[in-house]
Image (cartoon, rainbow, N blue to C red; front, side, top):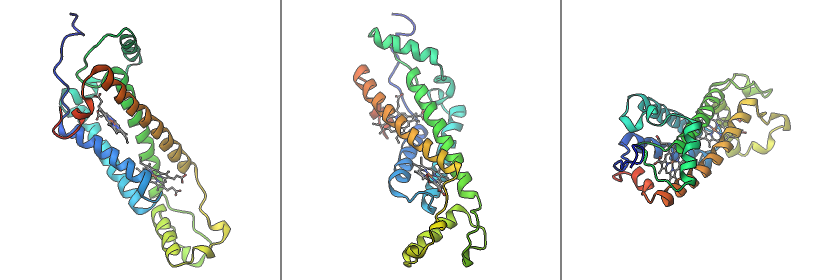
Length: 213
Ligand code: HEM
Ligand code: HEM
């Protein structure tokens, strides 16, 4: 038995890892499926997502051994070696994410970073003043969207001029593209989790659940 093939006890994720994982999953689901794009709730859920991600990243420096970035460095060379091990039917245990999973984790975090930065910039940017009388004051994207939905509620939406529709700026384009990229990564991540569960026979999803190991 080589050093890399030695038996390592089942992975244990600490509560911060579990809480941040499912917190981020919940925020993405809520913003992707429930909140109205750019609305107040969308932005607040977005800030909660940003805070949760920040907590996880700080944990990557100060947390327990298996949570630290040093336990799962982003290394394409190690990921390739891992693919070769899979192809050869070799079972190698890893104390943290396996090298392929690690690349996926950094990809997801990077894309989330782009979504958060573009979202926060849009939410804090003053909107272009409209020509209408009650739009003389600059408003944040959130205020603008809240005002738009208030108009919809009181039936004035249909009276909007065609030119009043807000344009999609480059930030919105980047935000949306990153969101679509994130959805692609999530599909691959879940496929990876299913594959790894079947290959290793380890209950890695249970290990990510409260009380599971
Ligand atoms: C991962 C979670 C998120 C998802 C799935 C998501 C999804 C979207 C989508 C699909 C749009 C429409 C983009 C477009 O107009 O083309 C949008 C817009 C927007 N999002 Fe997010 N978003 C997320 C996170 C955030 C965060 C973290 C913030 C800020 C804290 C944010 C703030 C905004 C704002 C202000 C807009 C309005 C853009 C506009 O004025 O057109 N979003 N979001
Ligand atoms: C919005 C969807 C999801 C996103 C963005 C996401 C993202 C992530 C991230 C960033 C990690 C690394 C955790 C860390 O080190 O802090 C991770 C790990 C993990 N996720 Fe997800 N996840 C999602 C959905 C799911 C679902 C639905 C499942 C279960 C079916 C799942 C199961 C796991 C497992 C088991 C791990 C640990 C993998 C390992 O043992 O190395 N994830 N996920």
